Image (cartoon, rainbow, N blue to C red):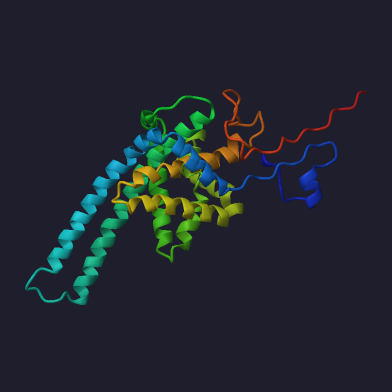
Length: 288
């Protein structure tokens, strides 16, 4: 049985009020769009910390993007040099193949790097959730799970990119299903494949909502890239902060004491949103 209760078996009355002698059965958590506003508030309260942490991803990516565009520029110059005739269809097809041949591995490399930095920021947010102090340099304290995060980034990036090729929708659905993969590696120490599988299992019942959440977060993240590229340094941290809060709702706010991963020490949850109902309480045995 799920730690959250079935949430679907039996009639609606028993699901909401609980069987005789039991507390109400907590329903499985869902992805909440309120977390986007909560993520923004958390970002702006400590903008300097998250901005510097995000630069660990933004600066290397700007270098990679610069290399990509430099290569593309030389390719364009080669087929449009003065005095040359217009490129024939075969030449244009070859140019497009080279663009995709470079863009796909670069996208996967960026996704792998992103997963590592996202993992570092997720760990920072969850440490702060437990009442610990964090500084920007903590984003680099992720070596214990960096290898698995790289694999998650490669597999996730490949899946989303391939899905996006089919009219975008499958890419967003896959991105939504895999929202919890990085936090599961960081917090539960799952392998990359286990984390991807578990994330998909947990979010499948709320797949459409998760996909829309992923779309909005990536849209906000992408808006920063439109400001000369460097604006992404301000919007990128929204992504890992939001993922950490989704994980919090699913596990730290919803797992009853005694289950694996339940918080046992630390400060009280500073976020009031996303708290789950009390766990089931079996009836006392009658005196004999």
